[in-house]
Image (cartoon, rainbow, N blue to C red; front, side, top):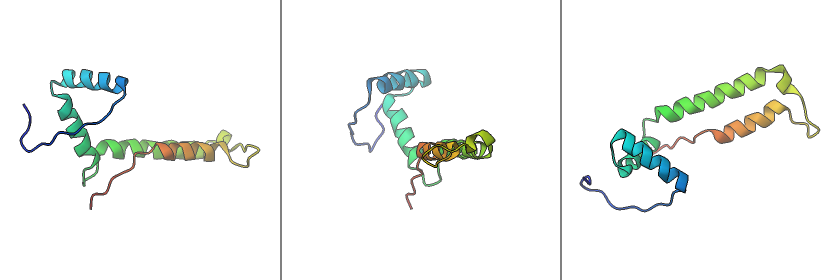
Length: 101
């Protein structure tokens, strides 16, 4: 059943993502559209998404652990330490929070 007051929207997904979406929707016994609507609502929520917050907290904790590890202080010829290089990569992995305010 299509919820009232919805508009059609088309997007492109990689084949693997479509397969995973189909399996997830079937397992949860909801439509693929509903999964996508829920994901969009969670991602754009004003209150923040607990998944994103937890994921980002894990990234921050990983950075702290790497910074404290003595072996990670080894410096490369570029002058950067292993910890600094890993920190840059991990910061890029963080999920950007969307502020709708």
